[in-house]
Image 1 (spheres, rainbow, N blue to C red):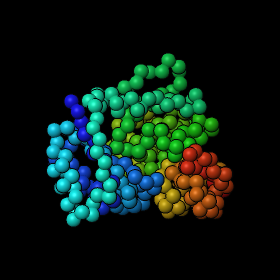
Image 2: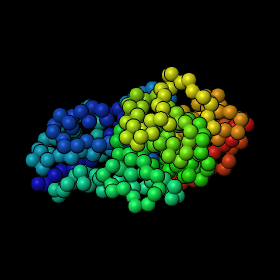
Image 3: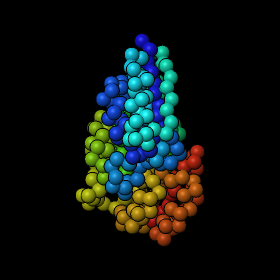
Image 4: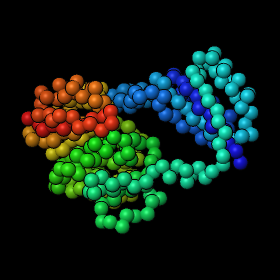
Length: 293
């Protein structure tokens, strides 16, 4: 069976409407990604439906679809304002589930920790392994912002530490901290779906005695020996006071989700209460480490 793949570029104003439209006309799958290099998620942004300014929607359709009629409807969508670009190509039939799974394989960090999807065979080595399947919540370890934090954990003593993972997403950093010896970890997020996914991942990895999920609205937790926040510049700037409150003298803070050109702005804010190191760069992203004064 042949398939058609339709890619359209739109703006954030029309992502939801177009996604619903494609589902209604019988799309097999609809996925959303960036058409630009800008970040999307801002923990302090109250707009739950925010997307990239330039967003690509990729749609898988049956070859039996009347593509000419579909394009005509798209041309009229929102009075012709919704679609900035459109591409169509034919695809050979394949096992789409296997195609998806092939893109996600175990990742080993500094020979200290492995993150693996559930469908991969266990490692023969004794490296501690965390099982996480790609899903809705950000965090499988593949993105530079996440891997920078994991590598810091691997290079530093986590034994018997109290760790706060602020903006925990899937809970990946919380679970890595627990596997590397943390005594107690608090996985904090303001998104209910993220917390539910984190709870499921924590349960599946049998780390419930060490890792607890906490909503930011009910935040009553001890001060951390290590606080990690893999979010974005704007929320990091706004959370400076809160992170100062949640840490104590000589506590470590690891900030990620910051682009290289944004690093100095973030450092300038945190230097008031933290002795900040030079940024650690991976691709265009950095992690920032500091010690509470």
